[in-house]
Length: 261
Ligand code: ADP
Ligand code: MG
Image 1 (cartoon, rainbow, N blue to C red):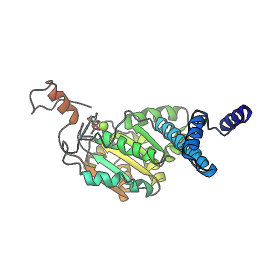
Image 2 (cartoon, rainbow, N blue to C red; image 1 turned 180 degrees about the vertical axis):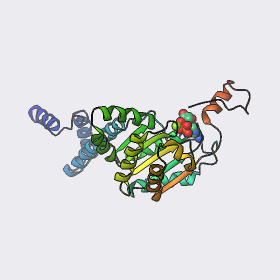
Image 3 (cartoon, helix red, strand yellow; image 1 turned 90 degrees about the vertical axis):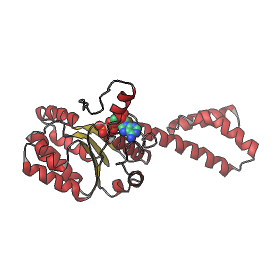
Image 4 (cartoon, rainbow, N blue to C red; image 1 turned 45 degrees about the horizontal axis):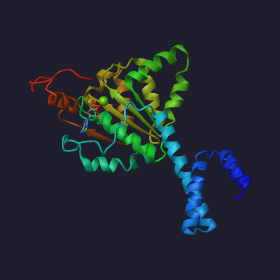
């Protein structure tokens, strides 16, 4: 290959937005000579390299857009520690069929039992399969809505939160939702109903959801739609956070129930 052709190929990669390929070209060309690849075999490897890099970039971009507060995977979930988490059920959820079918997942349980961990892990898996995900806490939502209401941008927010194939709404129950937030949530759940998935985590059982919302009627309308196509996982057991602290000797009295978030 002449130097001129070599430069032109590099330039063409750039124009095709395959900026990472120039680094791989020499290696692949060398490999092709060594292995005696045909032209088509060479092209096949080159395109596979380009596609791999593009999907890696796509995953990185989607992960950034998802706003996860931490990186969590199912691999680092200690199942024996939390026997009320059924590993088989989680493996089934990890197929993400529920997302493909626009179903919801509700993770209920006291603080520290792994609700957020599970939600993030499933969200990260979804992204690895090209699914768009957005993570926010109820506290984030309330802050956004307060600002949006002032700027008259609630409709815009509703549209933005209706779009991702999977939205994770974390920590339902720590803060009461005023009428505006309850109405917004009702509209969001209705928009997404049957089409796109929500994962909601909560420290409150459904019976207590009425207390979270200023309006009982809205609360039951929201729950009705949320639960229609859904899976609920009730996690009972010890807080993993407290276990770590206990191991570090912070808490000696195991019967005490220190406050945690
Ligand atoms: P929750 O959302 O239920 O309050 P988290 O999911 O935030 O609890 O879990 C608290 C911390 O403990 C996180 O750092 C999480 O990764 C970890 N954790 C919780 N349960 C487990 C578990 N079974 N195995 C490993 N780590 C866990
Ligand atoms: Mg949590």
